[in-house]
Length: 176
Image 1 (cartoon, helix red, strand yellow):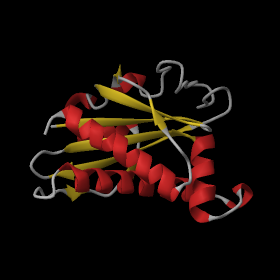
Image 2 (cartoon, rainbow, N blue to C red; image 1 turned 90 degrees about the vertical axis):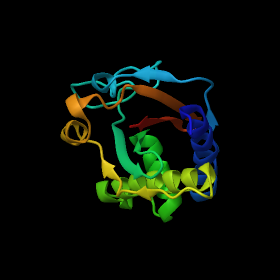
Image 3 (tube, rainbow, N blue to C red; image 1 turned 180 degrees about the horizontal axis):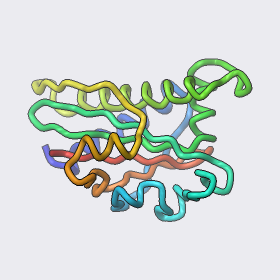
Image 4 (cartoon, rainbow, N blue to C red; image 1 turned 45 degrees about the vertical axis):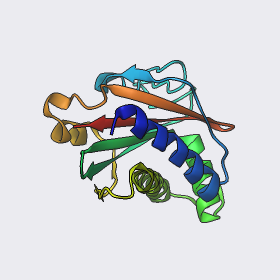
């Protein structure tokens, strides 16, 4: 399995998951952006802007990220990075609740479940003969990154940018 093949399946899966579960059409951008761990919350091609002072995107939006591990014929991680405004819309659509009733637990749960569905759907398309074991999705923290990969070299991989009408999100993959 090449990274290109895996990323192709992720593109298909993110479209299916977002449109089916959240009623949000998506349009993946052509190509990938390479980012390093230290730049995870930095300005990545103008879409995931991060301010150290107030953890904001576009002046008012926090970025949320989650990671899931997988093991099988090859192993690695998939990460999902979503601005809070888009995550709120996803959570509203997924849970059928009004924004004012949502808590941070709802947002984290939606983010982790989205990543779980994305990973499960992706690996069901990779090869029906291969078996993969998915870990439990976790919310991104720098300590999690450092414990997962030696030296914290975790996000030195392509960032797939997915546009929606409500903002952009990103997906990264690391194969060991």
